[in-house]
Length: 283
Length: 278
Image 1 (cartoon, rainbow over the protein chains, first blue to last red):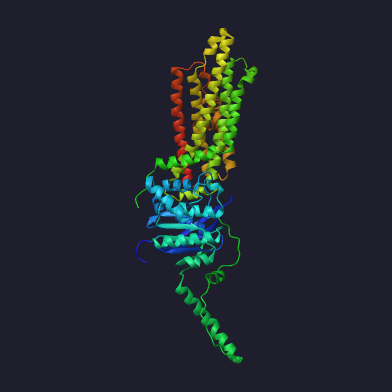
Image 2 (cartoon, rainbow over the protein chains, first blue to last red; image 1 turned 90 degrees about the horizontal axis):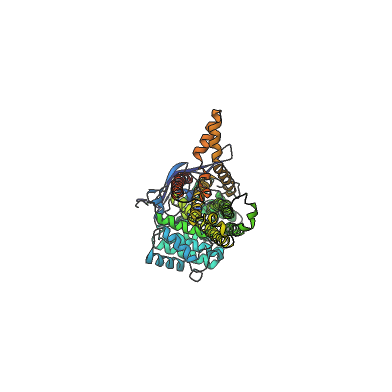
C-alpha cells in the first residue's frame, strides 16, 4: 500500500444537529478508509448507514466534524481535488431543457474542456453509454435509465482518474445494466479508480475488487473480494458444519461420499452482519 | 494538481443555464404579460390621474407596474432557481466539478439578472412606445398642450428604467443572501418581500432616528437605515419631466450606490453559501 491513494479518509466523523435543541446525530463515525488507485471499490451498507455522507465529504460538499479526507493526496475541501473526480449522484436530476449532448458539453466546459477536445470527448462518452440516438433529445424526455446513463456520461466527460458512482444501475433495464457494467470495466481497464455505491450485491460482487460495509456510520468490514473471500466462506463451512454433519450422518449409518465447494454469494455474507431494518435518520 | 483559479467563464456558463431556466419559468411569463398589459392599458386608467398630466400619469403607472412585477419576478425567480438546484440535486452534480461556490452564486445572480434585464427592457421600451404614440396623438388633437406634452424626454424614461433595473440587482443579491441560509424556498420568498418592504420604508427609519428621543429607537432605526439599502433613491420618476445633467448625475450616484450594496450582499451570500452543507 505504497504511494498516494485515490481516497484516503482518516477518522472521518460527521455530526448533524437537528431541531431547536440541537440534537446531534452521528452520520459517520471515525471512518478510516484507503481506496487504492485502479481499484473498483464497493461501498455498501443499509439506508442511513452513512455512505452518501461519506461520499459528500470526499467531494467537499460537506465539512467533516472530525478527521480528514484526501483525494489523490489533496484535501477534499479544496476545489482542485475535484479536477480528477467524476461523480454521479443517486437518482440524478439534470436541467431538463438541455439536450443530452448539450448537458454533457455543459459539464465538460465547467471542467475546462473546449473546442475540438470537448466535441471529441462528448461524442466518446455519449457513445460509451449508448445514447447516440437520443443525444439530441431534451433530457426532460429521458427515461430513468437514460438519465442514469447521461449521468455517467457527464461524470466521465473530463476523463477523471476517480469516478464515484452512487447507484449507477438503479432503474436501468438489463441491457442498460450490461452496458454500464461494461463501461465500468472499460474504465478500470484504463486505470481509473471507481467507487461504486450500490445496494444490488450481485453487481457489486461481479465488479468490485474490494468492498467496505458501513453500518450506522461505522466501518463494519473492509476486505477484498475474490479468492480470499471464497476461501474464508469454505473454511467456515468446513469447520463449523461439515464435520458435524459428517458425524451426524455416520452415527446414523450414513456416509458422506461427495464434497463440493460452492462459492458463497456476497449477499449471504452481507445480510447476517447488518440488521434487517432500522430507523436511522439520514441527512 | 494545480490550483483552480476563479473563472468568469464558469460563472458565464452557470449564468447562461440559469437564465435559460428562468426564462422557461411560468412566473416570468405571467409577470411579463401582466406588466405589459398594464403598460398598454395605462391610458384606460387616466381618469385616476390625481391632477398629473396624462403622459406623466401614464409614465408613473407604467413604472408602478415595472416596480411591482419586477420585484415579484426578482424575488420569486431568485428563490426558485436557487432552491430548484438544491432540491433537484443538480447543485451536487455541479459543485462536484471543479467549481467554486462563489462562481455558482455569481452565476445564479447573473442568470436572474439576465431575465430581469429582458423584463425591464421590454416593459420600458413598451412604455416608451406607448407614451410616444399618446404624445403624438395629444399634439395632433390639442396643439395648445404642446409644451407640457413635449416635457417627457425618452432619455429620462430610459434612465428611470435603468434605475429600476439597478434596484432589482440589489434585490436579487439580497434575496440570494436570504436563500443561502434559508431551508425552504417559501421562507426565502416571504423574507424577501419583508426585506423589500423595509427597503422601501427606509426614509421612515431615518426620520424616526432623527425625531425620537429614545436612544433605543434611534439606535434601531439608525441600524436599519445603515444595513438596508434605500429603495426610494431608485425612484427617479420625479425627474421624468426634467432630465439633464442633474438626472445623469443622479443615475451615476445610483450606479455606485447599487454597486456597493450588490457587492456587499453578494459577498455575504457567497460567505454564507460556503458554509452551507449540501
